[in-house]
Length: 216
Image (cartoon, rainbow, N blue to C red; front, side, top):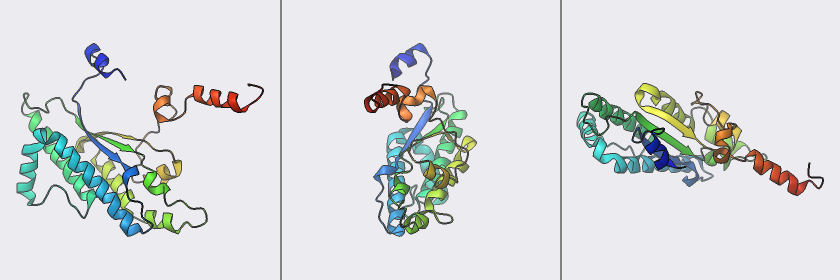
């Protein structure tokens, strides 16, 4: 993407979002659901810590104010969903400050842009047609994964997760693990995103020509 070119042309406006990036492929997918939950929380908390490191200059006052009011650390090592909720509230507080000061460093910011890469990598590890107990153990009832996506949903819009972009490969996980986040729109079939979301029509035609002797 020619980002600089689009910025100079005025078709892209920089500095509108604070990006929180999550990589679900990094989770320790232990057979024990309890250990797997710890891995999930560690990944989320690490991502939030990196988010704070990146934007500390913009969020420092809001973080200090939050700690004074709650007398709690900004990251809950035992509950990453709580960490995410606190992060959203801190960003919302900082953006409220920006609304009152046109010279604020976040004056043009809209909120958090959540990027979730390979959202289904965590759940896919437990798919076994001969033994569904592991998958059921991860997803039964109000699982931590569902709770996480429910928290994301509750934080969308005015709560200041302004946008969310999720990548993955398995529709089953989309229907199950992210059922708490049932406001998403599937953009996999959009032509302009073909190269990003999967195979393009050119890729398919090339593969078919390779495997089909008649070339049709």
